[in-house]
Length: 98
Image 1 (cartoon, rainbow, N blue to C red):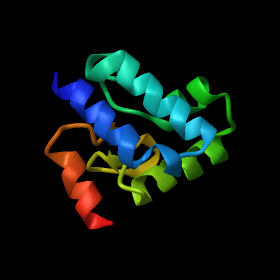
Image 2 (image 1 turned 180 degrees about the vertical axis):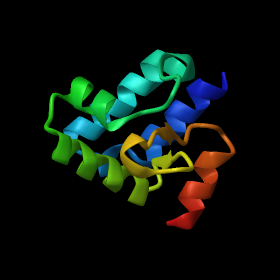
Image 3 (image 1 turned 120 degrees about the horizontal axis):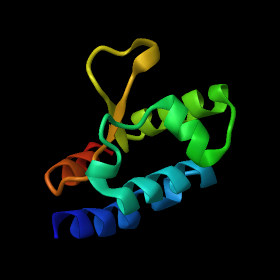
């Protein structure tokens, strides 16, 4: 239930800020759920889903971080993994931050 509410709120607030590739990735995360993306979103997964080059994937992911749609896992570097902010508690904080 929380995921459905989070998805609805996400699309009300953030959907118009995403390019086509970003929207495709976010949609895939919502379809697969957290278990489908165990280990988080990676540049390699982003490339495979959106069929874009590595540099574009990196730019798109950085843009999603700047827009507070995803957050990087601690550690960073070449193996950075990202998580979609989807919980009911996280989304209002993102809305208030704008």
